[in-house]
Length: 82
Image (cartoon, rainbow, N blue to C red; front, side, top):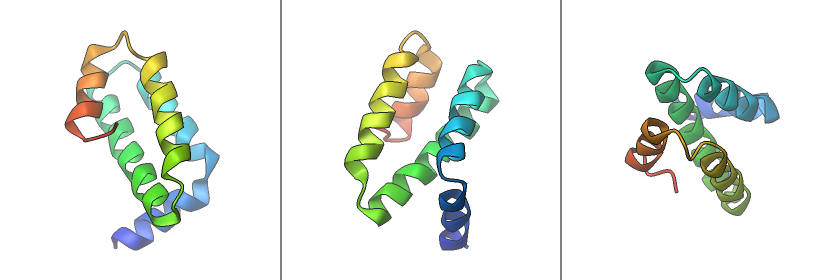
């Protein structure tokens, strides 16, 4: 089931990243949780596809862009998103 879910996320491609950004933009705890779950999926895809450097760069940019949102950053940290 997990592999199938990741395949669905992979098919979404760049749209998955935009979805994560849109969820974060809503500044809502539940939406932050959804964004983090999506980012975990994207991290797992990056590990599977050996594109972890690209993932880390995008996540670093997201962290910088949203550094003023401590609840979001706490969720990133709690999920082990570097």
